[in-house]
Length: 118
Image (tube, rainbow, N blue to C red; front, side):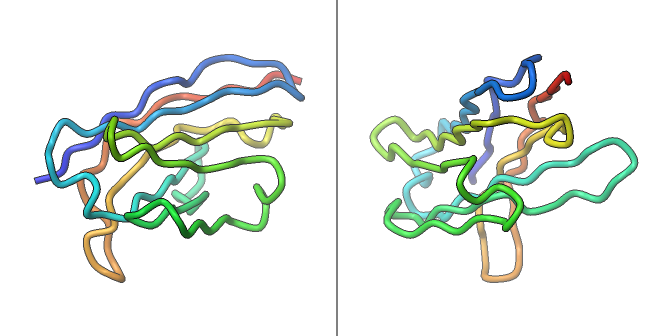
């Protein structure tokens, strides 16, 4: 069973950068595609980025293309989300989850807060 933990959030000024990490202690991590999502106060959770189980295929929400990069290190059972050129509207709790089936994610972590000041 996969159970993910996020880390790396914090407070940063607009234009700054952060690197979020998503780790799993289980031995099935390399079997799953991993997605990053975020939820801002008063808003629904939204998709940010996804990386395939091998790490060879990535996809991004339109609003982060060119600013965020997702990568995976299966040897470390870790997926990274590099956040660059941050904007105040990127402020949210960021979550990672494993793509269990084509239509569902599981193993959600507790989230990590990203706050971008203007």
